[in-house]
Image (tube, rainbow, N blue to C red; front, side, top):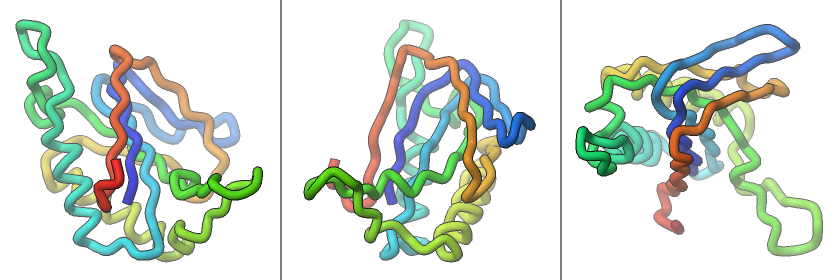
Length: 149
C-alpha cells in the first residue's frame, strides 16, 4: 500500500461539477492499493498516518500528529501510485489491485481512520475526480507499506 500525504489547510473532491466531500485543516491522502495488500498493510499505513508528527507545535516545530491537532482526513483512491515507468513510456499498472479488491480495502481504510477518531471523508472510487487543495507548508510525505521509501 502506498500513500502520498499532503498537509492541507483545506481540500475538496468534485465529480462532474458536484462537490463530493471537503475538509478543513488536516491531511489529503492519495491511497494506492497493490494486489498483494491485506489488512496488515492497511493498518500499518493508517496508524502511521494518524501518528505522523508533521503538524507544528506552539514553537513552530513539526511535533504534532493528526490526532493531536484534531484535524480531518480526505482519502482519494489512486491506483496510479502503482504505475511502473521503468520500461518504455507508458506506465504499467500490473501491481495495482483489481477494482473490486481495491474498493473494499479503500472503504476499510476510511473506516480504520474513523475508528482512530479522525474525521475522515473519501472521494468517489473509480471516478474522474477534480481534487482541490490549499497546501500547508507545503508538506508532502510518501509512505509505502513495503518500506521502499
